[in-house]
Amino acid sequence: MTLHPYSMIEGISWPAIPPPRSAGLLAMQYQLGQSQWLPTAELERQQLDQAAKLLRHALATAPHYREKYGTLALPDKLDWNTWRNLPLLERSEIQDCPEQIKSTRVPPSHGNIRLYGSSGSTGRPIKVLGTDMTHFFWLSLTLRDHVWQQRELTKKLAVIRSKITSGTSAGWGEWSDSIISGPSSALNIRTGVDAQLDWLMAENPEYLLTHPTNLHALLRRAAERGVHPANLRETRTFGEMLPVDLRELARQVWGVKLTDMYSAEEVGYIALQCPETEHYHVQSENLLVEILNGRGEPCQPGETGEVVVTTLHNFAMPLIRYRILDHAEVGEPCRCGRTLPVLRRIVGRQRNMVSLPNGRSHWPSFPSTDWLAIAPIRQFQIIQHDMQTIEIKIVCPLPLTAQEEAGIRTLLAEKLGYPFDFRFSYHNRIEPGPNGKFEDFISLTPDSRSRN
Ligand SMILES: [Zn+2]
Image 1 (cartoon, rainbow, N blue to C red):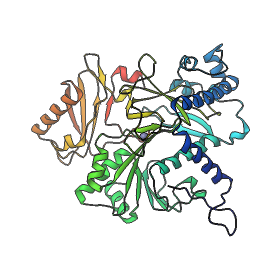
Image 2: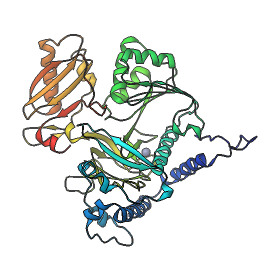
Image 3: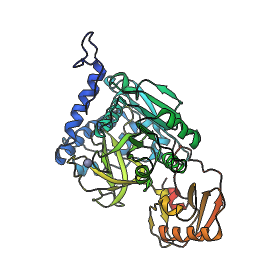
Image 4: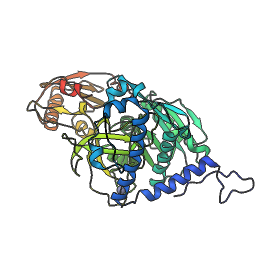
């Protein structure tokens, strides 16, 4: 697939002579197209060299790092041993002393300062600064995702999400003044599900971008109503953990594939879905991502650990070994041949883990087909209040019968691995958290709270 830039020269449209901004985006795509195949040792060498530049900049211009790292002696060539001994950066440090993490001397060539926020699932927001350069990488990785998934950019994109004003525009996004793309339409996610479906039928897009929980609701309702947007080719999701059965549901109901991406507002894209499989490739050209076990060592394929992120190009507010509080499972090297590290799945936060009385914990998953086999449940959320009690919030046209409740209890005892005291509560609607994201399992046990 080719990205087509606009031409800046009168009378010449093919091949196009792009203006500087488009030329920059295309030049970056060319480099990303090569770096994705680099031998692992070379990819890591490039990352460490870039990390060393960031580290020197942080030590020289961000007081917090000078204090935090003390008398760190940086070797001429940064090595993994030195790197892995650097203390992790906590979310609370960004909340408590943002001014100290900011650079006092951002290189002028990095452009304007930009503000990125993250509202956080438990309410205490953080603010992170970036630059025109961090934004450029964000745009470049957006385009890489389009290239990887072979999207026809002249077709129509529909977007249903939070933090957006409903309306239409001539292009797909901010880069569309540089690269040719088709029309797009946006709808705020606060719109009711039936109205969203009606809108989708009227817009009839080739591509739909939305949050997983919303797509789930759309597909369920579309199946009930027999509604199928005829042109739709692909659903794209972001911003929440992907429910285990959502890909299958998209295939069943609309016959389309689902492409997920893993990103966070304060660091941008962390991993994008492989073009050939359903797992994710870390965006190593922009971030140094470490998946660490409880002892702070890198996880092996098959192991799940904490996601720790370093933003390699953010010279306004360097985030070095930042604990983003998500967990992910490391995958085997990909058969597609790309050497960018693989995440098999993103499992969520500490608070999405169930804590069992025997001291163990795990990330439960709840395929909606299991629930639907028992009762016509529209929406659910499971809250662990303590080591014995779990509340099951349910949205359902009618309250469950005693037999249906018993069926859910048996299902959940099996999924969670313990016969908790399950208490049902009935609701008209279950709202997402303060960050607009929906979590189907939340633990309020002290252990989970202290880690978030
Ligand atoms: Zn791959």
